[in-house]
Length: 154
Image 1 (spheres, helix red, strand yellow):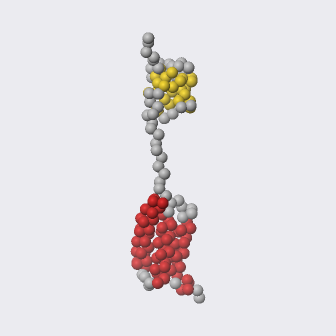
Image 2 (cartoon, rainbow, N blue to C red):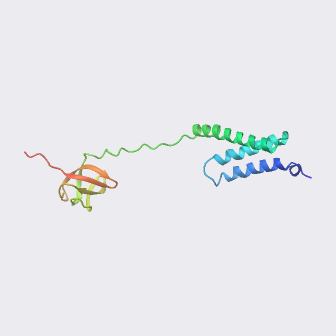
């Protein structure tokens, strides 16, 4: 009779650990792989030492906790998180833009050209005709609030 059948708890721990490691391919993150590794190590300890179920569960829980802590720290050092530097949202405030389509008062429909892209625009003061310049006051999602550019009179 094969040894793995006579020592069923060892087989269950090691088999369960292998199953959890393989399940990692379908479950995102490395959390489950650490649980599986702890299961395999518990099975190996159980092969050499006669442990009660309480000790087995305690060893597995301790190994799982330790592996998750140490492993996550190690993985963070090897694979650092990629941080995105947010583009400042106020870099467009005060910029002058050409009006592509008449900008209406408090109604969408107007368009301005900013950094080579047409944006929706509205005005609070007055209608701004196509072909003129406007100054960006603020941005609400994909719509700029603009004012007509009033050049100083000479």
